[in-house]
Length: 312
Length: 297
Image (cartoon, rainbow over all chains, first blue to last red; front, side, top):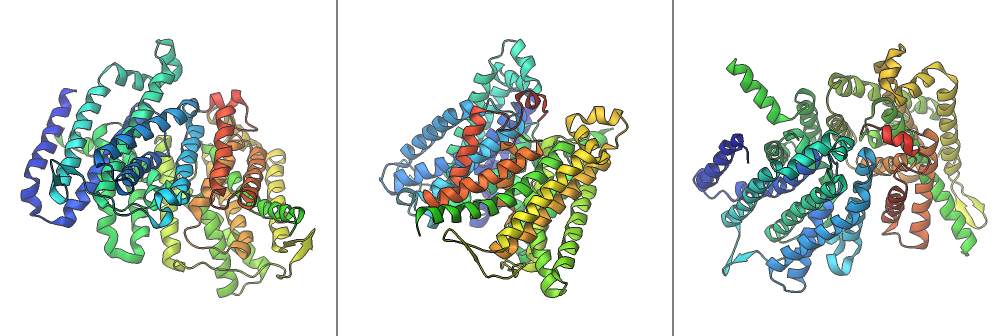
């Protein structure tokens, strides 16, 4: 982990400690922050894949869905404990990411985009059509809450679980970035040919990060399923994959902190716009457009630039 | 109904769907050629074409031909405006940011359409009556022939534009290598504007001719964009004729898959074919491997 990452980490930890004092049991706010945490876990994986290794994916909603449905089906229909749901979700998503990643990662740019998009849509259709298992479009209900030591986690407790998982993954990812592996990813991002001449096994590293980001998404999916206790395919559509991409880009794909921020902005924004009713979609589109127009490198970069300027 | 008439029915449905996908794919290809951007708002042009056509023929009471022209002009202007306000100011941004901005644009168009027309689907009377034709036992709406004819005309027009006019040739040059094109004195940004205007026009035409068959509502865009994008990639991205062929192919696979195998999995089937083609031949059906190695994104 680099030195400059310590302070933001400390701020997050301080925020987590002070959090209960700030919100005073406001359930609605806790729920939104749980969603922020869940989205941030996926966005982080996607940021590693996109911002660092330079590979695009338009299908991460599928891995999110695989995690959620594995957890949901195993616990609600086969009465396994949620821990097994999470483990199977991760294994399944990781395995599928490995299998489809192998041929897909040979593709470049737009071809990779459309291939991952196709994978995402195929799983979306499977979630819809495999009615005996998934419940189809009407969804899967009765997913139990997570329990640790006989205590079921909801509200504030679940919030802490999600954010501690997020924090651990963040520290893991920050260390990864500054390791041999992270440097290899960045080399691949810069130039695949260049990376190859340096003796980097490009195909292996790309597959590794693809599988890793799928595992992040699946873990987030399992957490999501055990939090909302009801899942339906509409949460795992192409729109969600694109929203994830948007989180990374809006926050700033160059650092993991950008992805965290972007996940927060795009989780909170719709909540604030809800009061506009018919205007909601219009306002949402307009805000995204303005942010991208004036901060093409992401919000985090824009803030940094402003701070530099004020220092001078 | 025996198998022949069923097949005939699916064939015509597939060709109709394919026409629309082909037009959308052609729009994608054009903008991609000029800019390297995948314009995710491409499906919204189709939606706007359909809804503005409904508006101009039922509210403004324009005759069919005038309504057609009026709609195409309005959507073309919207496309040009979109390029001027959203794409042009971001000359130096990364490609992924530009692609995201087209996505923001698509949400904006969708939000605007929902605000103006609401969430209900709108219909349009067929161009020349509803009395179906019968062919080997299959029932064929006359509108299908309008769809096929107009699509054919549009594709031919685009083909002639690329091969016979200087502007069209400049556009091909720009798609091959923007820097070299600029060195030869081609105004690349003018061509970018033109590419957005032309693909908006193509989208509008697709929307106008398909609305009498499938109705149109504000959120139809993304699914059309997905299919059109798949077709554009399958055709090798950058090859206009490839995009058209792939568009028809996807339409046919979809309708045959829905009829003969399972209607629930029809989209999955088309996408599976797409994936397999990409895995086996990463540069698309009609694209060349050499060319795709040169593409920057």
